[in-house]
Image (cartoon, rainbow, N blue to C red; front, side, top):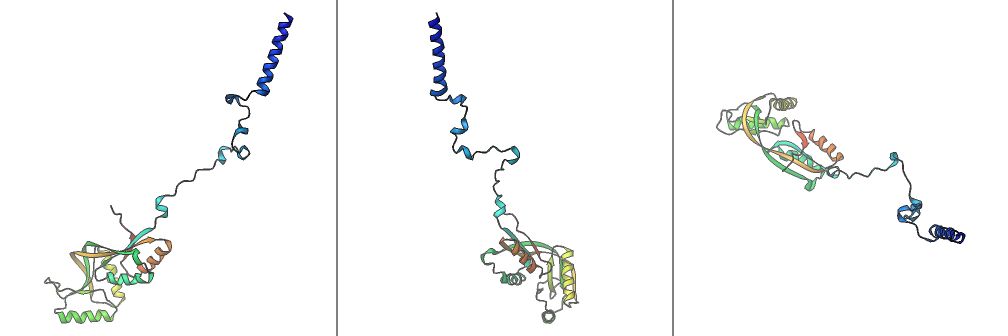
Length: 218
């Protein structure tokens, strides 16, 4: 009986020694998992406040350049506006968009009675530095009047009239006249902040014009 007891004790000691020093660790109860990681010395546990935020992808619009359009100009006025933009050397970034606008107001000089009289009045306008006009030649009651601009609203017409007054034109007036007028918008693409500032400077040189974002296209 004593011999059997000693054999059981020796068996337990041998089993303990084998499990403690000779057998490999049980993966489910591994006491030192960090030593089996890749580059464990580089691992660092961060508190919640120090967890780096994942970089957000930049918005698509952030890298996209703006599109601005300047107008609107009559077909006769558009070349003057294009000439004003020439010094910016825009190249292929500059395009033109033609629209039709319903004009309800215009600035004009009353009918002169004949082609020759209208031509003399046109000469007086040129002497004052006014280039944006045309002689009305249709068979309406305004035949041989001189149109100095057509506008969608009265405020814009009055602004044009005030500018003409500053140039010394005294015979111009404003009135209502329904008409569909072809207009041109000059569009500039790939506009950054520096170019926008230069465009606004150029646009300020033509009173009544507007610099705005290009309309969305479908």
